Image 1 (cartoon, rainbow, N blue to C red):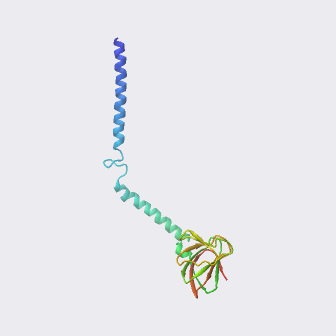
Image 2: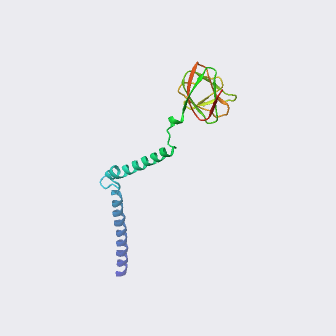
Image 3: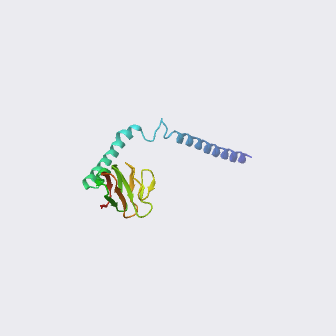
Length: 161
């Protein structure tokens, strides 16, 4: 009988130890990362980490600018002036932005140009909308100037006829 009581007491003490261990572990785990015990402090982020990140970003920007590959988008666009009747024919991937005057689409096939600003397409003969960005997706497509003076920003290869 004494042996049975010893086995029961031993089993109960193991169960009690497991329950106590799980409880203490759960309590300890719930406190980490809280406001009272943060994993990372705000002062570390603002005083140490942010300046290091900014320094690396500025260093990479300086390296790219020094190598010539960091030119801004505005520097890649060229201002082209057309007169009435002149055609600007872009290669595939050429971007055209109408700034001054009026122009129409020139294309043998549909779609003529992709209007990236409105997520639509225009066909041959359709008027371009000022300040919309158009993309040439089929070779030999482009625009015809329909005003005396037309100014467009162009990025990519093109020819004027």
